[in-house]
Image 1 (cartoon, rainbow, N blue to C red):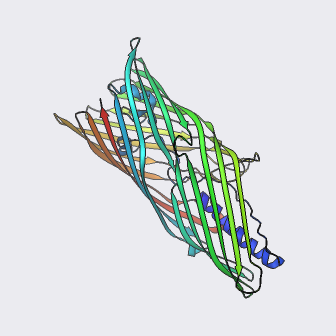
Image 2 (cartoon, rainbow, N blue to C red):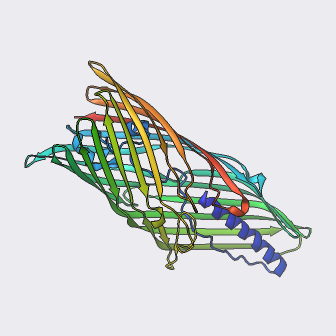
Image 3 (tube, one colour):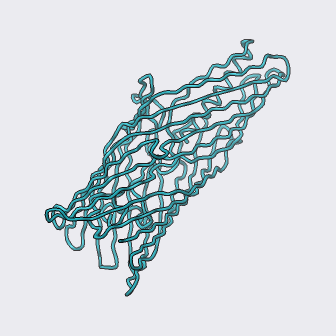
Length: 449
């Protein structure tokens, strides 16, 4: 929704420029730079990966006992007793039902879907000086930028009327390549860390935005047609650390905690903008093209969480996670040194962004047979998105199953995430809001060697 606010601002700029050009009697195009926002349509609070964890509502910090542990809590890696390799595939379908109180013609549902490799890892346990240790190499896809919007938009002012169609696409993702290490300090306590490299070039760590605006208008009986195209590309590189601990309090209770350090990412932002206007009556045609390439920085915020797991029996385990992200420390600094919030687009001094708190509750029941195990999982969660004034409320539920047979474990999970009447802090002048429905499927394969 943040990027769409920029589209509306640019659309309004086009409209005002047309008015100025026509009324002033000459044809030049002045492009007013919109406030910069970084739009992440998917959950902006990713923690870890894996179908098992997803099936439990993401309440996995205090469990973290499989090959995806490095993404949840590297302190849990020590629970892997044999070398493991894992791969996680993901698919999602997201529908955004948008409402524009001032421009009902732009209201409607927009849909996007995508499949991808969400996680890859290899883990190897060993012993040094009577201490159990483990190392792993991991790849995790964390943020997805996919969005496709198509809508009409009508603008009118005085003797000027403009009807236009907007075609907007955004695609790309951010991933991290991690090296994790965990050591067992005592029989019941372990410590681990993951070094994450976010590097564009080793693998695509970028996103692109394309906007095409076409339309026609009439000014004092003089018709015209116009077209504008804008393209933005962002390349992202940085480095941070995840630190985690796992404490088996007793045979029933386990406590886990994880901290993901803040970091400053290098952001390369290239953009182009072209526009043209053609009068069907009196008037001179005009074509304008603008391009820029800037080095910017993006300060990623600290996040941290704690999890509790209770083992009722060998078959049944329940868990709960509480997770916080300091989104008020999320800052974009452009090439001129201007510091803005990527959430609101406002200057840091004017922006009012609060931290978010996730709550995730899950459970797992194992049907243990002589040669195989079938799990049954379920979970619920509260996953708010940061927004100006107060976070937007998103909720969800999930369930999953799978089978463990000999050296192989296969898991599959479904998650439904939704938010109603969200995005109201964006485009207040257009009385904007949206309902979001997102369906996600994860499938995981883990192989023990």
